[in-house]
Image (cartoon, rainbow, N blue to C red; front, side, top):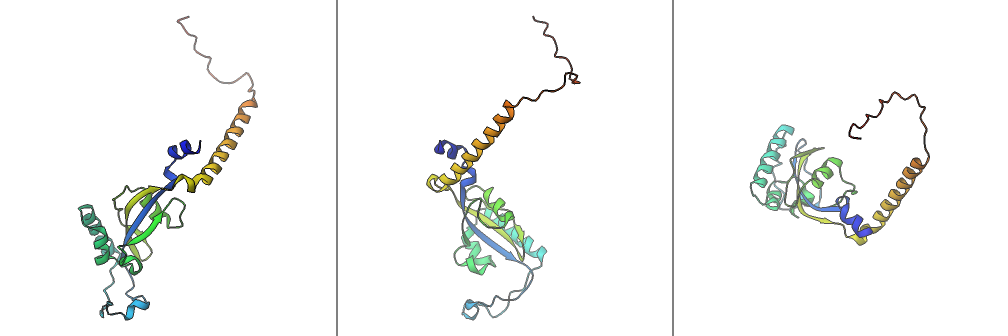
Length: 185
């Protein structure tokens, strides 16, 4: 049934609420967005980190988070991702099929709730992703996908059975060793 299949194969339907912290490296260009004129924007451009420095910083932050530091607070203090910083790094809820970079998705999907990834290098920065909450897409939402999956499975089984019913005869001079005779008989 759908439900049994769903319970046995829930992993692909796993959804994770993700937060991310970005440690940028490279250019010092301040993003020219609406916020840049705000009082919040500091007058002094932040010194850009080299890739090595950014990685070292990211590794240190991962250590602090794994040591119990509040991820959302660190994001507000340290993240270079201006879009998500104010929201505690919230990147939304990701599933297997979402259009996010493969390296980030596989890191996220391997996390348990509350865990944080090692730094993941992307263009322009290292990302640390945090699994805020893990859920599974409700059966109602994935029923069509499961139905398609089961249909595919039935088709595959049908083909396999078809293969079995078509007997292939091998010539008798097979170089197979004779079956050992059973001495107990």
